[in-house]
Length: 559
Ligand code: ATP
Ligand code: MG
Image (cartoon, rainbow, N blue to C red):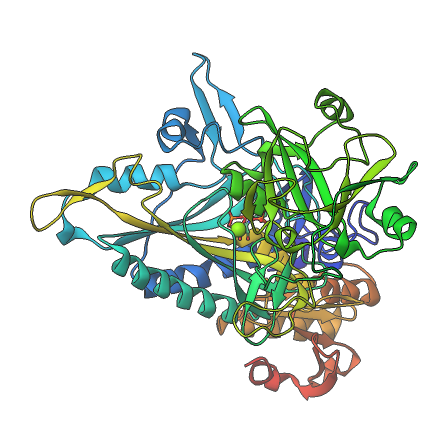
């Protein structure tokens, strides 16, 4: 491709909203263009990389016998009502109506559609297992679209679905996809790790996420040699901290204007571990208030809390001051005694002896509060696990690291096949629901994860097999011998099947060279004054190392 034919516009500066390197570089290199918040166009260079990522995914899907289809983005409401997700999915689901007021959504994921396709195509156990995938545009009205392609509202996803006769079959399918994902992310040159995950809005029992390790990742990985999980899912051993053995009588303590756990810790001269943190949530789905209790040094894991209540995390929000006065409590002094609410008690709270807690009266806390004797509730693990907690396998210290979730796999079981009646006929002639798995990869997010991992102060450093073009020929000036040799090399590389650009633009050498550094083309062939004696400079983008070579050796160097 000649640069003068390309729709190429690099930027000196990225718009202010771009704060992380990969987002800045994708915009500056002209690989993507913002349309509106969280919605982007893939420009020619960006699209070329996307296609390379997709090709690797396609090959690995093919290798495990998974066939490609392409579904519409638009899905009818009825399918989502059948699965029970129309009401449950929450505000991320982009809903729309046609001219006859029929309701649809723009697919954030495609379980319902694939389940319907397989239900209508497969009859007998003899036709199973089967798996299908697509690479397609998804829509999620994210609350906070940010970081460019990392969290966008329209994005490209590879989604695959497996259908088996039983759990044993699912186990095999899951394992096949798991291995294929390992291959894919290796071939994409990502420094990644699979972790245990919560199954979120998709549902099902077991799930893993594939995390590209990165400081800008929005996910927190909790891990050590024995265990690794997304923080949303991570469990740890219960920590018990007590200073007393015997239960004492409850007493009121005057705590004028002392509201936060930090303030209480100082005021009462005690440890946060002796204070019960009481938070009232609103459950919008069931239209009720919930009280959640964790130890004072802990945070509430909203996903675990939502799972304990069998609602979506989007159904939960903090109660307002008005809500609190409606139940005769008050902000900063909420506590578990005499609040007639459904209460979820974190496991650790049940071990606290003579704890401090709010009294639900202004400026008063209580001392010597004890589980069962003074309050009760459903006991669950609802705390956020953090570095320093002990793993549930061997009781060793856990660490934290940040990751970008590039893929996730789920064992769905019969979560969709049962309500949607996706059944097969077994050997005995009985109808049995298929056992499903689903497997996603964020293709556009992965592009950005690659850029995040491969960049320096000058721009992107694409691994050679992922770069939009392998090489660029940059004549110092596009005339005379330099032009002749550049053209000669260009034709030669093209004839050998090498994806090459000839920078035939009438620009200064510096501007041209910087553009290709920014864009991250792996090999730069600089044709300067030595063109007359058929010598060129060969530059490696990854190291910026330069060597002088004979022009006839260019191909070998690229290879
Ligand atoms: P997240 O927790 O980051 O919101 P998710 O768990 O909801 O993601 P899945 O339903 O597992 O996402 O979707 C499969 C893959 O699609 C994810 O692993 C991720 O790589 C990608 N993905 C999900 N949401 C987005 C988004 N808003 N923008 C870009 N990619 C996304
Ligand atoms: Mg996920």
